[in-house]
Image 1 (cartoon, one colour):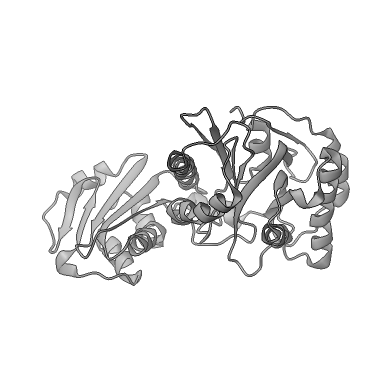
Image 2: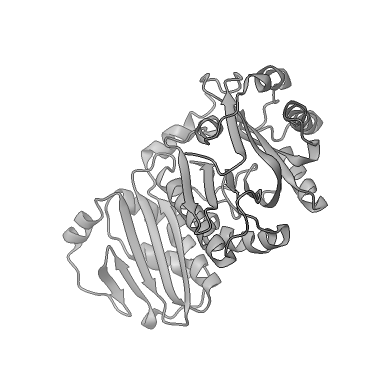
Length: 380
């Protein structure tokens, strides 16, 4: 996928991943970028997240990102902080940009020292190109599929987004690693005011396993090379890209065979609708039922109820694959036909609460033996 104007990316094999696949990547703009950032709420955050927060608070511009995969560089003490700082320093020197204009990112196994000597040897081997694919391939870990999306605005500005993540995902902020870049001209204040809302309606509504990664971050960068767009159009397109990536994350959940989409309307607020939808999308009982094609709608009702949102049983309606299962009372339905309708790549749950005007959507996946197998043997 072609990058927006003045952006370049590249990657190499630095022998950080045991597989020998590409694992060290660079993304750079030819000129400084305005940017917005959201990081994990996990209190055991990795040094790359802590450093990113400090740079973000300083208010300066951003120009490059360096990412390693195969090693989270988390829970590694002062040596981990030094390794993260060294990675930024090496990338800045190689690219000829200020060190504080370089963000670091790491993903992989927690608790193992990051081999700085491999960064030193690998970074000079990275050649930069005008498309994002080498960068995306290198940041993947247990992902089975690359996740990317793009949009073009009426003034010619482009938005390109990539992310990685397959497990340890109900991030309560974003996802494992997500990078959205554009050549649109948008002020830093505007980006920072709008970004969190986009995150709340996209990456925050994804669940694979309810575990929040220590390394999650989502970054939006704009370099202004193509001029100022209509801001409403810009934000619609950014959200479109992020929603696409969020759906791809859910579909590629570890061991997943299906995408689970949950729509809630009639809630007391949009926030309550999103909370109820995410509760259903993340319920292990319902996710297991989706895997087994079991239209056990009681698990949906349970998940809505445990979310704590305002609801009344008499006003609640639940539909599965457009089949009415509950409308203030148990509805007669063909259980076998409902089961057959669930045998598809996307299962849709629709819930009407009848309380207000709030709407929300969440994405998840089914829970399978594959998830257990992947995570039972992750480091052995």
